[in-house]
Length: 363
Image (tube, rainbow, N blue to C red; front, side, top):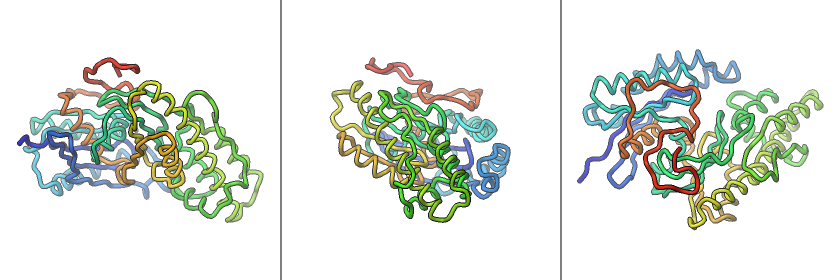
């Protein structure tokens, strides 16, 4: 029997310090042996957002301990590892450097290959860690920093169908929360208050609705919320709940419209795929109203909806380890001088050699 691939993964792209060990067997099945995440929410909450310098210092302070904990909980030793994977971008550059440097040191010290992982590829492949998901599939990545549709044709084979032209969705949630005097992170608080609100009280815009693409725009919606809040003056508790509910309803209707266009583009490229998977990943995937939109759209368009558990949608190292395992299985490794990147579009990730397709055989 072929020994499973064991990968240590390290994630330090933003405000979570994380380490994990993941196994991948010869059939492509995954298992999480350990997954340790340290959140920095308390450190950043007073500033209403992530402060890069604070994040980088926290990574330096805690990463050694978390890697040791992940290794101990996995029950394995460095000599048994098949490789070391770390986020190499995109993200806050100081934090990315901390994690990637640690991974390089471990790889060098133990003679293991390094896999420099695109953080977005970690999100893109997480569903395959949990169950057998065949390529190609449609991915919606919604987080604090990214909102985009990707056609996932294979490991390292991505075609961006649409993206935000301004704010990411998670960022829009946080900015609305800040306008309303709510804490950070804002998404969960907006969602909780929206349950008590009147979603039809404020007629917020549905940005780009009806356009024949699947791009997003949330800046105008955020501006409409700000103007409404200013017009209201002193806000009652019900005012806040109604704004949250109306904002969330606008986002949900916008998402449904944009998803319809994304499915159309996916079908045009892969008409022979009868019931493709539709993967939703990133922290905003935990929003229950949006999940209901995705479930309805999946039923309408014949998609298999897969939303990973919340702990694997937010930033974590298991997804980085898994992406490393998937890439290592294809013989993809990286040199120890691989440079950290603040920006690294997913569709520019190095791809192995694939057969030609209707959409970009080369990423």
